[in-house]
Length: 99
Image 1 (cartoon, rainbow, N blue to C red):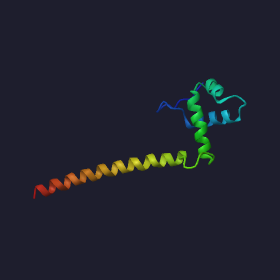
Image 2: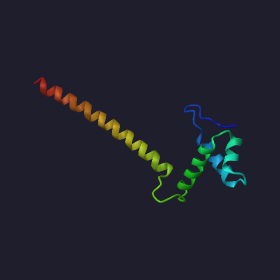
Image 3: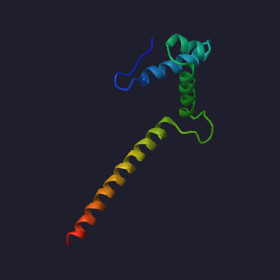
Image 4: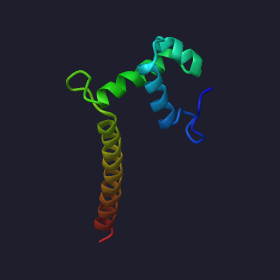
């Protein structure tokens, strides 16, 4: 049975890690393991592929999970700063018009 995160509906990191370990150490195919765990074979294949990348075994230039998370964090920060700059610009323009 699959283990879903209660907040996102996605699988927990621990479940994904255990599924990858099982798929990697089992004599069965990834598809068979996925079926037994109740996850999609494509999803489990993706987790296995990403685990290899995170271990440095992936293709050159592939982003690790940590790099992807950092990219998401930085993009969010840029959006927040752009919104702040826009508000400050409007406030400054308004202030100049009232003088």
